[in-house]
Image (cartoon, rainbow, N blue to C red; front, side, top):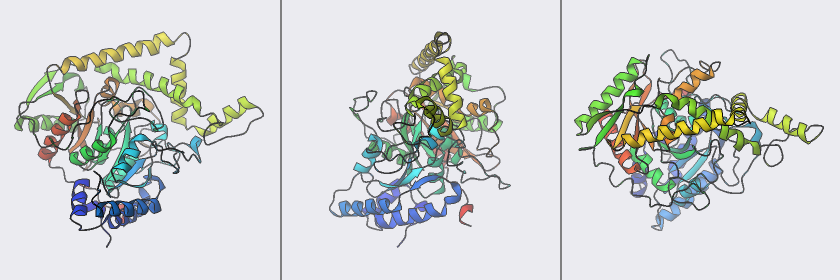
Length: 492
């Protein structure tokens, strides 16, 4: 018997496995079949079907012995930014050609300890730099959703492969990473749920670094409950990551249905921008109404330094990226392009190995860190970042969570914004402030545009209050009653 994974959430599949309605091997066989049918989406860089079936057989054996973990037998797909022992890890870059890590990232190791099954490695923007999943060396990911006229759309980025895999239904969940919105924005554009936890909640050890003070791993899945289950498995202190926070991980599922009665939900005035899409504004208003009807108090708040956030992010993140990516020199990892001497070998390797967007951000980062400009740009950006963080601290003295749109638009056509990087960067305008402040944020699918495409709402929480954030998200999810799925055009 082969099981269609598109009919299940993680929670309902766990229930079916526990009742012995099917086995993990049968569920995994269904996922592999669906994954291979979904090749037109280009969501995978590396498929690992044999490894998946081996892990599924082991999961069935553990379950038979009464040793089932939290995610026992659940097929997941992994963003190709997480090191996976013995499995090609590319960060979607030519420069990591042939890199097979000798080690496993802590986040994925935690998932395997809880019995999850790996389907393979997911496509992404190169080194997680992008908002549309078009900068991958392996080609763009195609959103499972299409425009009414059949135009192919971007899935968002950088975790576009993760969002597409879950939305298309062949993976019950996926890992993502979020530096400036890379979990939340693609979740919104593909109609799924994604949460970026507080910085330090999930270990970054073994994840290819982009901007170390911003990068954070998190789950992407079909429902808030599924995200809670995955986060439960991924989170925890890791002595191998100096930024990992040593504090207990609460039971994220236990209080999920506690509701929002008596909570105060903040609405930041600064997020209502000139020229905003009326559909996004209307959805935001609807979200406020849903939470109000559920018993929350809606409170207007100010986050006065919000309009500096995007500029600040595009100084801090490239600066850290230029430093982190200095290690790819043709000596220690992957690609090596010969030259007449060592310097020319470095130049040839980096020139050929990095794509255009990565080169652009390395140059921006190197410039803002250079002598004479460091204080004018990088130091000033860090000071503004502190002010943005203080805005949130003051707001959270009055409210329990904040509601905003996730993205300024629905999914757009592939290639539409490639020639205008500033317009592309604006996709992250609502998600970047949360990242700069290190706060948890999540996107919940809340409706469809007039063009029939998914739109999401973003919730922002207090540091390490993921439980409360998930509770608000669950309330929003129940009110929105979002059940839309893309037509499986890739199977026809």
